[in-house]
Image 1 (cartoon, helix red, strand yellow):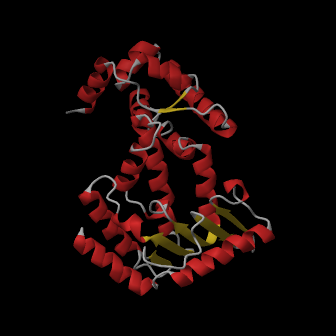
Image 2 (cartoon, rainbow, N blue to C red):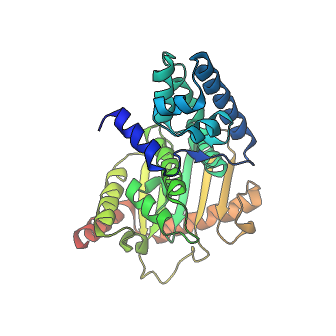
Length: 292
C-alpha cells in the first residue's frame, strides 16, 4: 500500500486520530507542542492550503490538523514527515521531531529517564516484574496491556515507546555501572505468553554479558530476605549525590536525604549478598529458558 493509499485509508476510516494527548499539567511539554503547532500552521498557510485540503494532502483528518496546530495533540513523527513533504519545507518541519521526542512521553517518565541518563551507578531490586530497563518491547506491551483500569491502546503504545527509549542507557560510553536483582518469579511469570517470556529471557542473557551490567537472581527458596518490603532503586551521580526509592518507605517517594538513602543502600547491599552471584544467575536464567 502506498503512502497516499494509507493516508486515504486513515481519513476514510473514521478511526481515532493518531498522536498523543497533551498533559495540561506538563507546562514545558505544553509550550513545546504549542510552538510546533504554530510552525505547522505557518507552513500550511504559506502553502496556501485550508485545513481540510491540507489534511487530505498529508493523509490525516482535518480535525487532527486543527488539534495539532492548536497545540492540543502531539503529532507522531510520520505526521511531521508528511507535512514537510507536502509543504516543501526541505526538512525544517521534520527536524521538529527532535523537539517532540521527549515531550510525547509522560513528564514523570521523562524525569526518570533524565536521572538515569546522568547516573554513573544504578542499583535496583525487582519483586513483581522485570526492571523497565531490562524489558523487551513485547514484555513491556504485555505488562502495560494488563493494567487495570485499562490503558487505551494509544496510551499503551506511548508508555511502551517511553520505556524502550530509556534503554539507550546501554549505549552510553562509558556506560554506568548497572546492578539488578530480580526475584525468581519475575523470570517464570509468562506475561504475554510463552514466546514473549523466551525472548525476554534471551534478552536478559544478552544484557548480562555487558561488562558494566550485573544481573542477579533471588531464588524463591531463600529463607532470609531483606527485600520483603518491595521494590527499590538507587541512582548515584558523578558529583557524589544520589537519589533512592523504596516501595512502602518514605511514602514510596524518591529521597535524597543521606539518612534515608543509607537505609535503601543498606537493603540493596544485603539483597545482593543474599542473591545468587551474577555467574550463578546467568546459569539459572539459561536453565529457566531451557524449561520454558
